[in-house]
Length: 100
Image 1 (tube, rainbow, N blue to C red):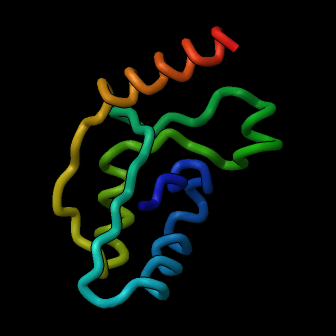
Image 2 (image 1 turned 30 degrees about the vertical axis):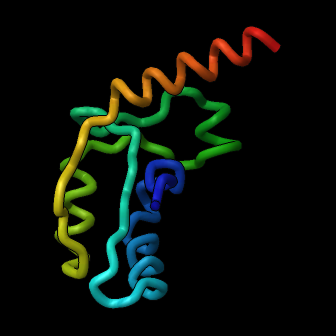
């Protein structure tokens, strides 16, 4: 599973997919999970942008599709919205944090 696509910065997208291509076997499946939005959105916190995740952008499905289309090695098989499941996870983390 690739869950760091947005964290690596949009300037690295093509190299990330090139690296994936080098390590997977032909006909392998790669699961990509992103925190996305309807439109590309830059991360607004300057400290996180500079020190933790430089060039981070909340990606849109269209951006991921363009990367896959450009690469011509990967196919988009399906996309799912796991918002509600992720929301429940965040609530559980918050409750655990508050109880400690």
